[in-house]
Length: 180
Image (cartoon, rainbow, N blue to C red; front, side, top):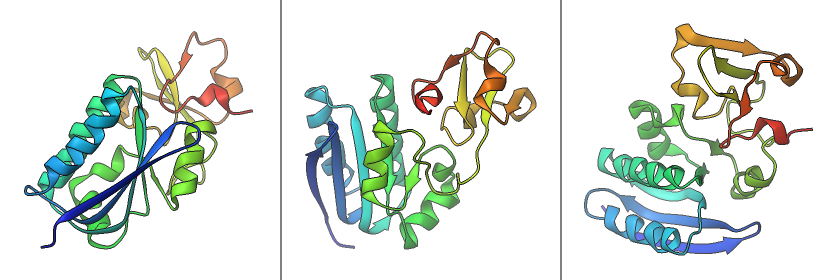
């Protein structure tokens, strides 16, 4: 297995794009963690992880992604993924991480999704709004937070208009109120 190289750049609107080149495993996760921590220390909280050249990923690498997601969202930031394919995509799907993250076809789409939540991730071509009876927020159905709602508690709406009057707040992650 090869080593991991990381390139990072800041693009508008204040999004950090981290491109992974090589293998993400127990021998290389510290490289990713240091890169993310550097930006978190600078209060940069919007990340796109570009996986186009990620050639190998194992469960330890997925654990590093989970660590990053938790740390970033704890500070009201978010992390989106782009161009996840091949063996890395298989690992994402097999371990279930693709169920609670947003994966975009291109880096540009992932970056744009921070400013325009109507840019939907892969697999979210049709969507609805989701909440739960005791939930404070309402979400897009593809939102990672919506996927945490117990299936028995889901209340689904086809339009945002149906949510009005229910004393629900738009989710701060997917921001459904931002869509016109």
